[in-house]
Amino acid sequence: MRIAYLHSGSIPSVYANGVHVMRMCDAFADAGHDTELYALPGSAPAEDVHAYYGTRNRFPIRTLPLPSVPGIGVWLRARRLRAEILRRGVPDLLYGRDLHGLVAASGLAPLVYETHLLWHSKAVRAAERLLFRSPGLTRVVFVSQALADDYRAAFPRLGARPGTDLVTAHDCADPVPAGGPVAELPGRPGALKAGYVGHLYPGRGTDVILALAGRLPDVDFHLVGGTAEDRAHWESRNTRTNVYFHGHRPPAALPPYYRAFDLVLAPYQQRVSCAGGIGDIARWVSPMKLFEYMAYGRAIVVSDLPVLREVMADGRTCLMCPPGDVAAWADAVMALAADPARRQALGEAARRQLLERHTWRARADRVLPPGARAAPRAPGEPAELPGEGRP
Image (tube, rainbow, N blue to C red; front, side, top):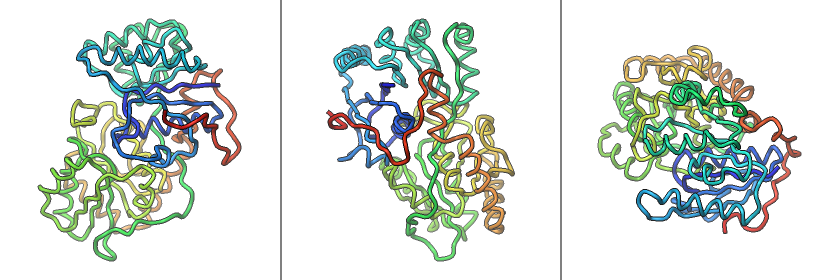
């Protein structure tokens, strides 16, 4: 079937939402669907968008800019998006995280709305009410069960709406083949390498990692990711010689770093900001990097937050610590440093769970309406790319 994925963010970008969207489009293409992506123009340099993200399929990407009209720019773009969809031919399914685009395209094809946070904005809530009244809305997809529960509380009629399924689908990662290049990291030969991959926004635990470095001078800490501004902020506050900031890397360039780490850290705090350091998603977060840690079979030390217990199990697939208790984090890291067999067992258990429950390909089937699912392509068979990937 033909699927148009509507995204309200930019492609390519340095943000996690772009990675999520590209992985989902890749998974839809793997499932045999003709997939095209509509997004904002890119905010990160990349000559080849698919190479930047490391996708297997070269699905087309159409970009529509956001008009600089305060208050109504999103709706003007949504109208243009509807016209573009009509011009190119209406697909069989409209899927996406672009709330305004889905509202504008309502009535053209069945709709699936995916949401990763519950906005408090009255304007956003009003737009969601419009979407939830659309007769073409077949599914609403939530990235965590906590988010699904909060949506049911905020929109009591949504759960009882006939014809609309509510689906919880956590983030995922792709299976990782054995072997591959390993990053040559700076630091001391033989020192335990503790890794973190992700942004450096408030609430991501960068301060916890720096405090850990002070407590554990024999461990090298490697942080991969963050905008130039955020990296400069934390580097200016770091006084430890066992901390290394590697900056942003394209998603396709991350595998060697994962392979180089002995263990990985996910120190999410009680309050976790979105892109740009705004908002709070700690109650609903489903971090992609956590699933990528699992895919590479690395021992994980992660914050003990209720939403993360939806996926992780303390002592079986990870070690969980109170978010701000640096002493507990230091004890967990040292326990794993002293026990390579335990590191391996935790990493292998996490990887098995990833393969059984949390691959992008499995998620593609879970989020699509039953009639929209398709048989997978033969291994290595690419998706068709009609024309160039970007207009």
